[in-house]
Length: 466
Image (cartoon, rainbow, N blue to C red):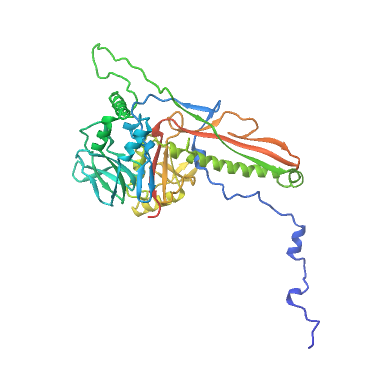
């Protein structure tokens, strides 16, 4: 075999100039600062008015409210068997004053399970109420007679709602509308006869009912606050009523929460690798971004002060048919004055856009601080990916009135912090350990408060899959 040593592969042909690969070794590289995918727009933090809080505590004083709050009950399920969680029966106003756990347990044991199907009529309007209903799962609509015939939707009930509890203190109570299942689901029913049999021999139960009747007998305004006596339309010199505005004796106090971490940087890195970018500054910048993301998540989801947990149950509504429609958003806006902003998961905003397109509606963009954003009825509709999407592929829309002057929702931050680098956020040097690692304590302090219940509303059970 003969080898031609004069032949060279094409890849080894002699070059006529310096290759780019070799030239790069002498070139200056242009670099970006470290990038981070987890940074979001954080519209919620930007739109909340932040109130400076001294002493770490913010107290919300309100007028005295005589009407008992209505909450949602919870359930315990074992296979097909479902029971109401006895302590949560206090969310029914007539049972709010019961402290005896045994009485609540006996009440819980008297509820019976009933399944219903979509379209099934559960009760007929104007008929006597003979049972208290708890919605375990599914949706039930209350339909009232319309003035010009047909039926109109009065309100919807979803998981945890209770219906017909007015019969607990009024023997002549009747259903205000027809109840019909929108989806299939499960109810728990407490027969009135069974309840009355227990009330005859239970002193704590009778005391709670008496307390509820007493609250209901006091004059209140439409928000349940103690009435201020006034006179209007009179002439001459009649005796004018005397009055005063009573306050809650135990107003709610909000303490500032905290998110913290310890940033560690080796001194050799900080000493030798600071050109062209300061390593400590870049580490702190990314850490602060992560803390701000956690702060927004806590403002939405924290069980103590988060907006989802602290919305009044009277300010929560469900969608009419599942997906977010213009009708649902109109209902949400109609529940309060001066709604300033709406927040929803980006997928909810997309679903709302599809519903608008399906109806031939094209909402106008709203100008917000120089940004053109989606809106409805002139109210900005802003994305917030911290609002969760539940396992049923449903989510929630938040409607906020903001600011102290408007009795709205406010964010809370400390007045001043040592070593503060941003409002409510400080970085404190903790020293260098024996392994030459520098430590920085990075902290941000925050909370949120709802000044009056109607400042915050929720549109719940928003379906995304349709």
